[in-house]
Length: 177
Image (cartoon, rainbow, N blue to C red; front, side, top):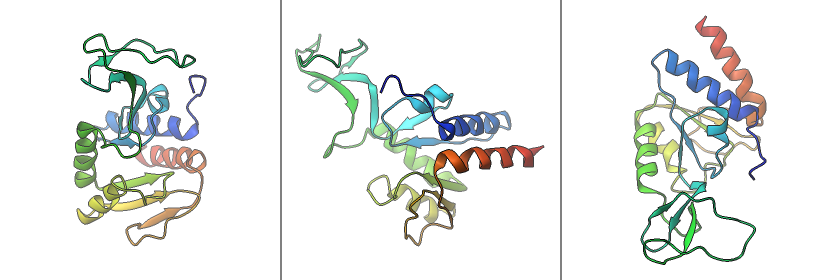
């Protein structure tokens, strides 16, 4: 995964976020991805499912900055308590990081437009964000090649994100000029 680079969708979102910031507008980017491709593209993102390139102790929670060799099968011991160090990602059955979840909920409740990109919007708790946005008066847009049959969605764009987002950002940029 270290060799992966941001795709056109990541680049478009970074451009959009930067343009919005110049106009004193806020685009909250909430991602379920555990990679850092949004950051590589230049975005600021809240990671609902954690971050693969960060590590913490499974016992005491201490953050471990050291780059852990993923080629080895040996577990790394925490320097504080001796517990096992693991990637800071959410595994099945685990709770989402509380701070990230609160940030996502607040953004969804306060937004005017909620755009769901590249997800079925069917897996909770993340799927509840669109519902929360809708309940608070937001327009809900879905960008996904396989549209979700949901009464929440106001606009469906059934295309790959890498295709539709660069075009959408280009049109928004032209509209502001």
